[in-house]
Image (tube, rainbow, N blue to C red; front, side, top):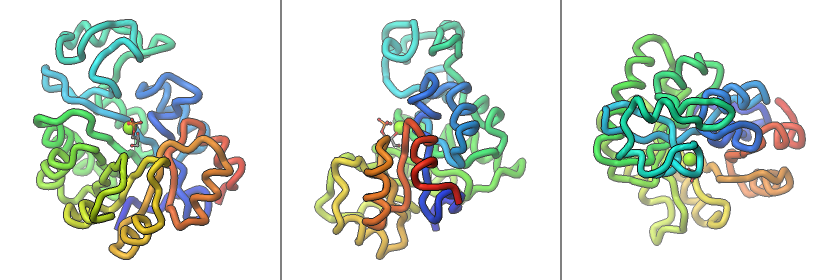
Length: 243
Ligand code: G3P
Ligand code: MG
């Protein structure tokens, strides 16, 4: 179960967060390429369904923080969106462009940020790449929006899914187990040994976001956590050692 263990540190996965957010504009092709160049074998990025039907890489529902545009993504036409600067001259990429850029050089964790058909749209894109030879176990689709993740899982049951948590649920890893998730991806604020134990007892791996301090990553590894998301994957790889 779980995404293939492509860890560069013994059994501990270091996932580039939004590409390699500490080094390059988040959720851009440059960011993904930078993450790979820095040694990350897995990359995470955020996607939303644009009204045009395109799946695009963007974290916020609005454009201000990460581009030179303003207003809501939903109110921005596709051509106008593509004319924005997402940092260092980068465009807001489509999911297809991200997959083409990465070319299986890293495993990909696609985080569904929007609902309302995003899961189905992402499933449609990813299944095309799987049909063309991309191993399903080198993909992980996650979301805080568990009904949307469920929709994705129905549409593409061969692709592992991860439940995102920003708190500690009453039934520990119950939602992940119910969803048949491969992983529980939890905020570093809420790592609880009982949650970790419950997830592991049910065959789920546990990944923690966002960890930029190598010492914190080492401590989490000691607690049985399987990996972390980092804005600086190079720093963690340097300290935890390449496998
Ligand atoms: O998927 C892990 C992490 O990216 C979740 O939080 O806000 O950075 O998308 P956020
Ligand atoms: Mg994310």
